[in-house]
Image 1 (cartoon, rainbow, N blue to C red):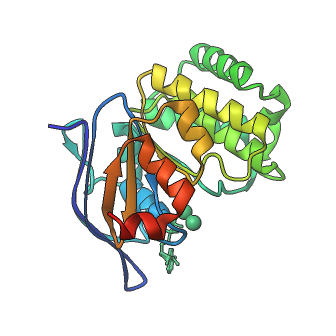
Image 2: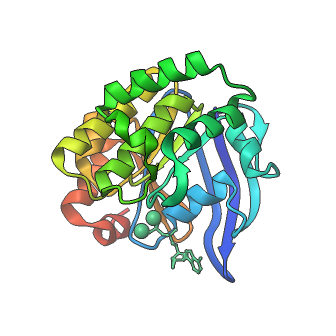
Length: 244
Ligand code: ADP
Ligand code: MG
Ligand code: MG
């Protein structure tokens, strides 16, 4: 059995069927990318796997042998699924450090504050995030790059089995992109299997992506290696899908 497997997944939102009989399987320890046109359903797929209550979902999703589609969001997180948001939300009144502590505690069932602090300091240093961010409200007034770095900090701190990262590279300058890329690479070294949603070649090359999946008409329409992403970059989705 594959490490992560999606079988005949259907997802609807507001009476619109976005995902339609999708199948996908991924090996442990790999980095895969899901590409596809704007509005095709990449974020919807990510949300449905994480368990957002807004979507009507049927099918099966297995992580490490466990069927997760009937589990509430927090149980899916405890099973080891992490979602990095395309647009991280701002939560005024909740400090970053409080949010990270509470999330860590909820995920692991308990928290050793000494261990937590050690790990937090290590990964903040690794990503070059200033300590002052800990006492700011979650994402409030953060730049695009700062928000994506904080998502990457969570990825390293929580050390999930499977991370779905929704456009972690959107809106980043070259330097921030490098930091986020190094963070994802480190997460892989730490044992996290990664699914990356992106439009850009740069991160895919840097990470040496194993699988490229193209979402279209609610299904994985194409599957290949990095050369598939290169073809899309060169010719566009329509041409590559039409010639498949
Ligand atoms: P992508 O991430 O590939 O750009 P999305 O998953 O965000 O695409 O969106 C897929 C489709 O679902 C789009 O047509 C979008 O308008 C629609 N959609 C997403 N969220 C909602 C919602 N809350 N209400 C209605 N339609 C939605
Ligand atoms: Mg989009
Ligand atoms: Mg999206």
